[in-house]
Length: 218
Image (tube, rainbow, N blue to C red; front, top):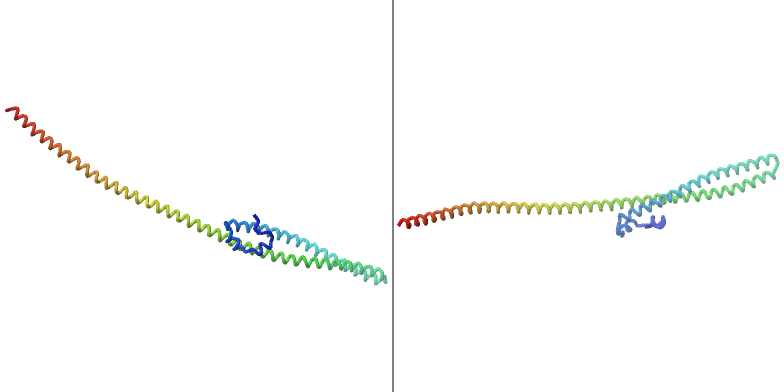
């Protein structure tokens, strides 16, 4: 996925607007930075190549200037020996060399201007990358804060649920204890009632048995 088609697109891009419109701002910011870094490598590679050409041109210029000086010295030597024809030839060669000197100087000036422009582009590109990194850090921070808040809410919700369950369990235990106490009271009452009923039955049996014995005696 290419966000920028050329260096000017990066320079003129509204990073904030692009990220605000993106469905996934973090992913978009990473892609922006990746493309900016690749572009920066290309610009620096071009600048390094241009610097090397500039140094070579400067060396050529020095050699041409030395050659022009040598032809001037040869012309002067020819005149000293009254050889005007040789002096004219030497000066002609000097003029040819001087034309090359002017061409090299113009080319050197053009390269210096181009290097200044590339230096400016690199600085602007680094500034854009700095802004993109800040936005990416901000997006990641907001995302992390949101994630932490969500975790805290989920944890709080889970803690509340556990507290509710614990409260219900405690209430159930209290109810069980109360019912147990009631059952215990019922158990005691039932035993006592049974014993009383048994005594009443035994007493009735004893009375009926005594009456039966008396009846038989008569």
